[in-house]
Amino acid sequence: MNLSVLLTVFLLPLIFANHAYAQEPIMMEQVTIDGSVKVRLVWPEVLPDEPNSFQVMFLDPASNEPITDIVWYIVNVRHPAYEDPIEHYEGSVLHGKKSFTVLLPEDATGPVQVVVLVLGIADKRTGYDVVFNVHVVPEFSTVIIVMSISIAAVLVSGRFKYLNKAFP
Image 1: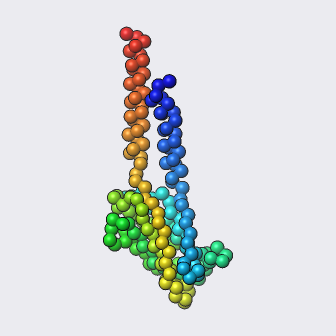
Image 2: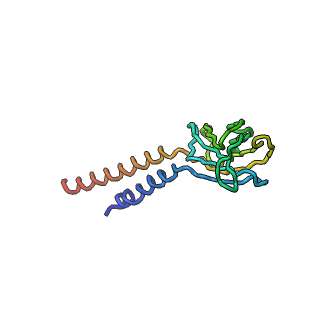
Image 3: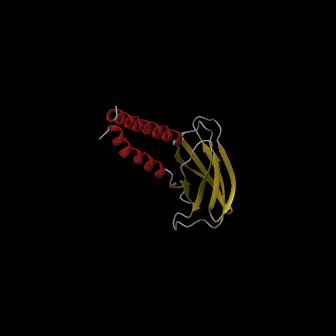
């Protein structure tokens, strides 16, 4: 069997399977240093230069249920290549769940920090933060297309070689 056929049969499904798997959101949790709030971050596969939605939940660490009081927060999305935060959100949320949209610049791949500062719950000030380290993946669809075209070209050229030998 031709080597290009073997590569196509075994490698191409692995490439597509890994890409599909990477699209599932990642859920991370951390408790503030004083133990008053558990912060859950649900972070999808984030691509640069596209609007991406992520979610922050503020939970009671004992019951793992959303905090029903008003939670005052600041959320910063930081990338090491930039001095200022890429995105900055501040406000309050009732029932402990808030969604955000982040638009990372095209060159902002690699590690990103999401810093969630819990300013207070109801009328109680806290002022503790948690830091999540997440990863921004580069856009791979161009690579997959180029690889697919290259493999197809190798297969087609191999077939024409075979036909030229069979029918001189």
